[in-house]
Amino acid sequence: MFEGCKVPQDALLGKEGEGFKIAMKTLDGGRIGIAAQALGIAQASLDAAATYSHERKAFGAPISSLQAIQFKLADMASKVEASRLLTWRAAQLKDSGEEYGKEAAMAKLFASEAATYCAHQAIQVYGGYGYVTDFPVERYYRDARITEIYEGTSEVQRLVIAGAILKEYAP
Image (cartoon, rainbow, N blue to C red):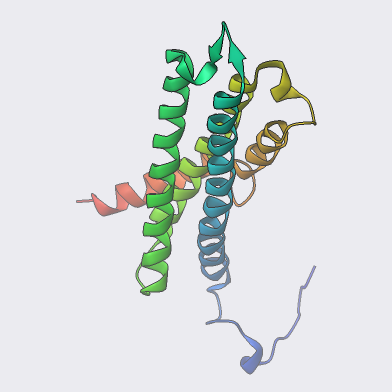
């Protein structure tokens, strides 16, 4: 506890009394990094699933010929690209010095949930092999899950987004 602690004026990170605001801005920037991490996990999951679907044969043909597999890959690819665009948008706003808190939360929320979804679908494509450590997709799932937790859980991201929207539309 820092009760009675005196900090010289030249050592302050911002104006006195604005520490919480500064801390929240730091979280906003970190959320873009987590979104990018989640995007990488989602992309790796898609890459692994698509590649494996060409290699694995069932009923005399690659499983990539099965509509169920194709639908999984299509949904994964759509979530990857949407995550990419949300992440780029948040980063672009930050780089241009504009407000980006809502967009960072949106990118982090969508990309982290997309990563978990894509990793889960990759495990499904791999079947029983998706669950063993001999293949990368079981790791992608573990890595994806944590992106929904740190820098604020998905529920916290929804609160940040809703708060910003309500502020935008306030009478």
